[in-house]
Length: 497
Image (cartoon, rainbow, N blue to C red; front, side):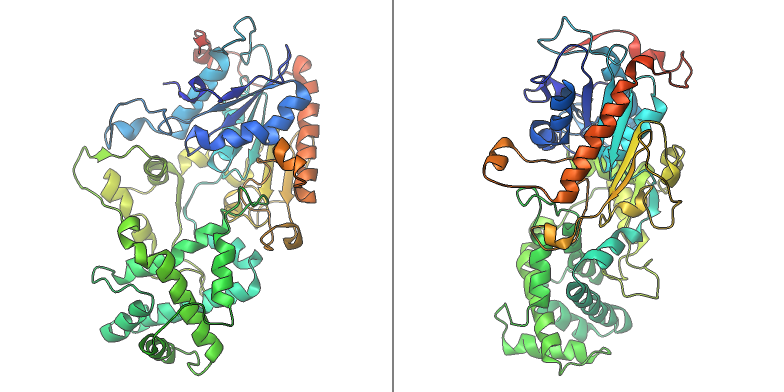
């Protein structure tokens, strides 16, 4: 099965290409290939292609975007979705492709160097491509590559705790502790729980405790959506923090809501006479009501237990299947160590977070993370495989830069870079870098308008261009240590676009 994204306009750029130049492959990862277009039009791959007279191309992952092998998706035919099979697609593509307008040139991996680039899941994906198909992919840049599959990934929230504004984190921890005290320690007090939910506008009778707690935790994922470029980054987390830490009441609340808030706080170890605490709790409730609980019909999902079950073709469904089969990354609050207050509710358990695997896919066994971690996990390394991560990335603890992993020296052969962007250099005033901040760049129009990237990002992208140049100089004299008969199946015929 060959992904289809390269058949559409805009999915490859040969405007900088000169004969003999490299091919820079952007792995689309767990999303529609169109979502990666900016990386090709004005990202780091654009800079690489311009510098080294290369061609840039985006390739979609099977079962994402338009790259489905079946007209209808079911729990039965989604079984062909795996990282291993998708890697075989990519190797076949690189070994057989013919680009429109360049039919007279041999641009396969036998003839020119192919450099893979990916971020997040796609970052781990290209890292594994380099190791599994070294004779096809001459080098790769793994940005925020999650090379370690983890079933219980409670650590996701730790960089948020460490690098978000301290007053915001104090508020999140405190308010969540109040919520958990009511839902867990006063679990049998239905009146108190109903008053708590009413303050947040969660008055529907079908909002159970677990759903309520999960909904309150959902906004934290916006920290990952931050970016150094405000046109790319999501300002949700900044707005969330400003709401929680505002000294002024931001939402109109009647006296009943204020009284119930004080009642709820009084049932905990906190002081209900502290007006700042009450105001903060009311602002927290008002924000969550406006952004979440007033839209419950839009956020609730439905599941079926039929088999085979018809599935929606969407990135969420496909990634959910990969999570359930081989990657994990369930994020429970119940696993957070007792020596700290969690940022999400302890009512969110591993069993609850993974329940959709049974409901949506009829999967009843844990993810087989060995299928992923056999490639190296935290210890992944390979010649000409760059590992780049952001200091404040919630996914860092699933990468080789995770806390507690072995220290490494960065070399041209194996670049190993952790990038830190000071808060004063980020438009939202919150420290970075977060999730694959090296991949996007500024357009010519942005530059003409005087926009600039943070110094750390500029320096990082210049370093990437430099060490890729070192790799390309090795092309004519390289000898990968690999079985020359390995993966010969990827070269069985040409693939004409």
